[in-house]
Length: 188
Image 1 (cartoon, rainbow, N blue to C red):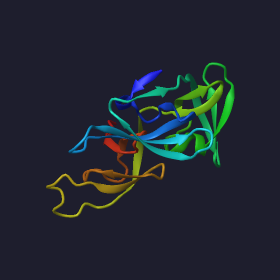
Image 2: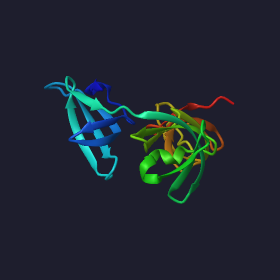
Image 3: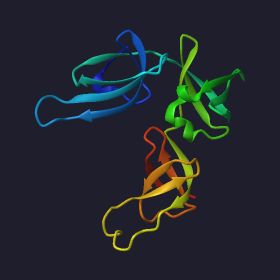
Image 4: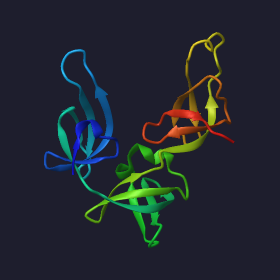
């Protein structure tokens, strides 16, 4: 299925240069001179090599149709992650390489979507956001609260994220799984 270059999103799988590529990062760039373009970072699904490609806004790319199947995350064993199909109760194991950086956000019994291409698991789609606890947050420096400054914090999954000054250790926060960025304080 052809899509416009501006519609490329992380998690999309594209057919480019005769291979399948998983989109890991996108950035829409509008330079002062010339036309706008999409800067796309992709990873080859089979080999694992990375490619940075620029697509002009008017370009179209081939998006691969993938089968989506509901799974539940069971557990991690080293670099292997086990999932169970929510409909057939069949279990599969994916490597950390197949899941990517999003593996940090996996939690026991989390409902995920595993994308398949020709009956082969390709990647995992997590929920858009997860709620995590801040286990370590730097103290606020006096005088910094007047401006919109952020401070580093460590989450319960080990990830570091920038949070507003009012977030303290023990606070539950909502984090975007695609970007790994703080979104808001979780309602309790």
